Length: 465
Image 1 (tube, rainbow, N blue to C red):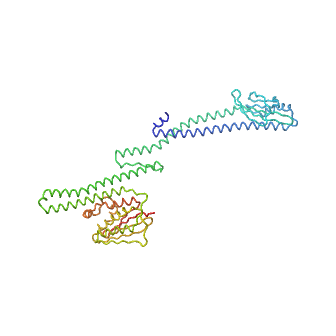
Image 2 (cartoon, one colour):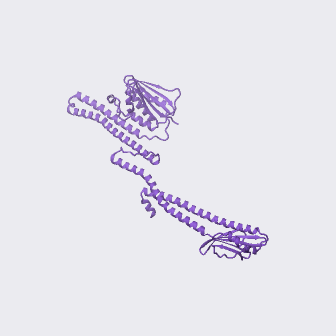
Image 3 (cartoon, rainbow, N blue to C red):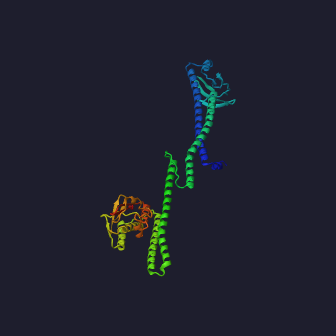
């Protein structure tokens, strides 16, 4: 039942109960041990005092020569002077008969006993009162007897009772303080979590702009808040990119569809009887259909690039051989272009990337270089080993890209010269696909360009181990 009730508590309640319980249990254990240690120490002090008294009595008798029982009987005044409050001292002979006995507030009847072999210390309860009984053998000359001390533990009991009362009061105060401390601890943990929950609710109602004010203290809760803010930044950026992607894709699809619709309408009205209009419209419609096909294929390539899962073990690729094969294919496709491959004297390390992905990356870079190099038909490729990467550079001598545009070239559907790109069939997705793909393999892509002098794209791919 109690377990069920604890489960029904709020997180704040659970933290309060747990922290308060932990504080109180710690205090209780510490106090319990402290009480018993002090109690045992006081009892040991009582025993030491009694042993010291016995030693003084033995010394007193030992200093006398030819001591007799009568001398011991006459030592009452010494024993009374030596005796303390709540204590009884007596000396008995070997038969247990009392020779001398003095008492100072310790009225107790001790049963006669034989002479012990050594010092003995025992506890006794007489009339519900606690006594310490010490029995020490007495050997002086021919005398054989026992020194007995019975100490009433009244003072000891008073001290321990007072100590127990003080600790009980402190325990009650500690319980209240631990409950308050537990509540404060719970509040300090719950407050940032409440802030996080409120921010989530605000995001649900007002959109993705809301963020948490991260405190200056860099503890685990602050790290959680910072991580949440970073996650929301990524989500907002992803939504913005998705929205932009849909808008751009809609725009790219709308243009060829509008052209197709226009030519089909023209054919419906006039093309049936006018052969020139028929041929022109069919040619334009075929061209736009091809552009739509390319756009859809590029969108599929981009989707596949985003969904790439890099396997744990990738078969290393010989970069030199792969580049040679792709370049030969381009020489066949574009015989009017000159392709120059600068290979290092020593073959570079193999690259850690799937072969078909590496070939696709090369195809994207070479295809872009060809599209934008219509005047100077020369493409240069180079291969270098730089640290833990193998770098492939593709340079064209085409129109180039303005410096202010370089930061946007890897965005989806981005084209520096939209009219030229549309004429050449580009949708602005090639470099986006390349970046998405190379990022998956832990590499990176960069671009350098100068207007009128050409562009260099560098592809850095991790070496294979």
